Length: 214
Image 1 (tube, rainbow, N blue to C red):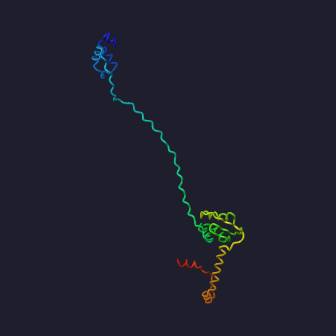
Image 2 (cartoon, rainbow, N blue to C red; image 1 turned 180 degrees about the horizontal axis):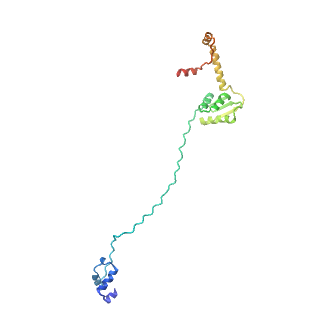
C-alpha cells in the first residue's frame, strides 16, 4: 500500500490486480476501492463467501456401533414332579399287594410264597428265608419299599421261625371252607339227593359280595 501511495499507478492496473485477488462480484466497484485506498481510507473487510450450491462431499457415515452378542442363555429343564408316595402298608398282606400293584411280580411271589413272616409293623419287617432267594432280591425288597413310601425300612432276615407263607395260609383257608361246607346240613342234603355231585369250590364271602355288586 505504501508503494501505491508514493507512486500512483493507473486505475486500470490497480483494478486488474484486485481482480486477481478476489472475485469481482463480491467487492465494491474496483475504481471506488482504489480511490479509497489512495485517499488513505481503510479497505473493506473481505466478505464471507456464500455457501456454494455445487456438489458437496458426501458426509461419512458414523461408524456403526459394534453389535453386542449376548451369550446364549441355557434354560434348565423344568424339574420333574415328585412321585406320589404310597402310604405305609398297615399289614403284611397289604405290603405284598403293594408289590403286585407296582408290577413287581417276582418280588411279590417271593414275599407271598417263599418268605415266612416273623414280625411286621409299618416300617419294620422281620422275615425268615430258606436261602432260595438271592441277596440282591432280598435287598431289593427294602429298596423298593423305601422308594415307594419315602420311609426308611428296617428289614431283618433270619433263617428260622416264622409262620406259614401267605400262599400256605390261603390254601389252609380254602381247605377250612371246604370242610365247613361239607359239614353244612344243606350241602349234605344236596349231596345225598345227587350222589354223583362233587363239591369243587366254596366262594369266599368277599367273592360273593363282589359278584352280587356287578
